[in-house]
Image 1 (spheres, rainbow, N blue to C red):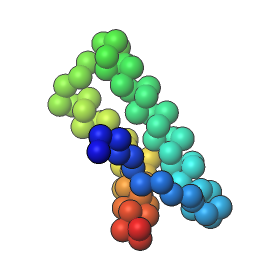
Image 2 (image 1 turned 180 degrees about the horizontal axis):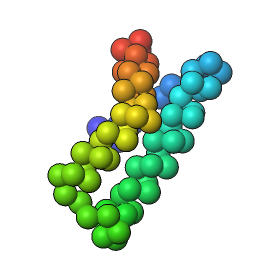
Image 3 (image 1 turned 60 degrees about the vertical axis):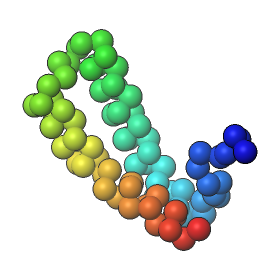
Length: 76
């Protein structure tokens, strides 16, 4: 009862993988970089820098990324 998969197991088609892989790479790299910069104090975490972080996520395609995975979830 305690072992539960956190996400449903799903195999992407080649087309789906080709669509999502570049978004995943770019978004993941940006989030990892900014997380490190916020934690180390290289970039001060305040309302302005957080707003810039969010804006950049949208510029990099986070809306399409979320919509893709939402569609996969709803199709299950």
